[in-house]
Structures are given as C-alpha cells and as structure tokens.
Length: 198
Image 1 (cartoon, helix red, strand yellow):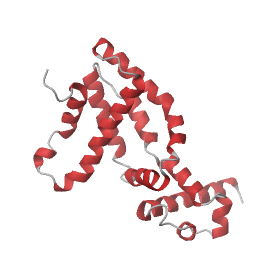
Image 2 (tube, one colour):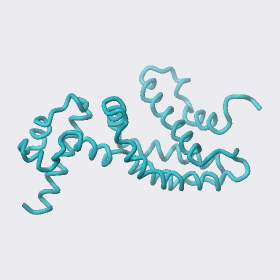
Image 3 (cartoon, helix red, strand yellow):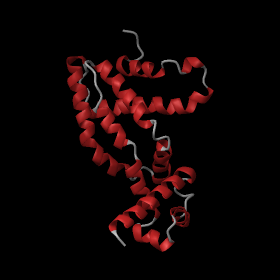
C-alpha cells in the first residue's frame, strides 16, 4: 500500500474519531465505532494506532487544537500602543476561533477525562511563540507597563480572552442586551485599567 493511501486512511481515522469524541466524549467512544466510522477494520485501526484510543485522541488534540490559528493571529496583532494592540489581538483571537466551535469540547475532554496530561506536550511547543508575543507586548507598552513577567502578561491576556469566550457561549442565548453590548470592549478595558476608579 502506498504512503499516500496510508496517509489518507490515517487522516480518515483521525477525522472519524474527532467527530465521535466531540459528540460522545472520549470514554463514550469505542475503537469499534471509530473503525466503523472511518471504514476500516478494527485490525487496520490498530495498524495505524498501535497504542489504541488514547494515541488517537492525543494526535487529534494536538492536530485540531486551535493554537494553529491562535498563535499566528496573536503574532499578527497590530497596534501603536498597548490598548490598540490588546484590542486587535482579542479580535483576532475571536475570529480565529469562529471556525472551531468544537474547540471547547476537545478542551473539556482533555481537562475532565485526561486531567490535562496532553497539555504539557502542547505547552512545550507553545512557550517560544508565547514569549515572542509577550516580548512584542512589552515593547509596545514600554514604560507604561508595570514590571510583570512576560509569561504572566500572556497568561493574563489568555485568561481575559477565555473568560470572555466562555461567558459569551454560556450567557448569550439567555442574556438581556446589557450583558452583551460592547462586552469585549469592557473586558479589554478592565484588563488594561482594572475596576477601581483612579
């Protein structure tokens, strides 16, 4: 069998498993279901993934994690000052996640069913780019920024963004307009200036 056909089968298995994981969770998905969905035999499935279902999930998690879009979006962020840079970065993040509605399902499977064991592998790949983003952040901010470690700048920004993203998903369907109007602008303003009047 040619390498191209093997690669296509491998990708078909990953795609089938991804859909099943998103719909049913990791523990709710069997190897037989993945094989049936991908159109391969159970033995063929193990030829591609000898370590079984966890190997499939690990590859799915690393391949479909939105950092592939998030990091380039953050690295492309523009702004002449910290405020415009943060607003542009936040908007770019939102746009990059619009095509990944299943992202949270994947993250919750990793968090709840795996206790974040695969995140360390992801983290190792992301640190250099994250520090580059923090360096740009600090360069734009100059003397206006408090002396916060670069890693904390990125962590706090991602915390801001994901708290916005999560609350948006949870409350949008049931919220009155005042909970939604200009929400991202308010989140960015609170991130930059806090909640206390100066």
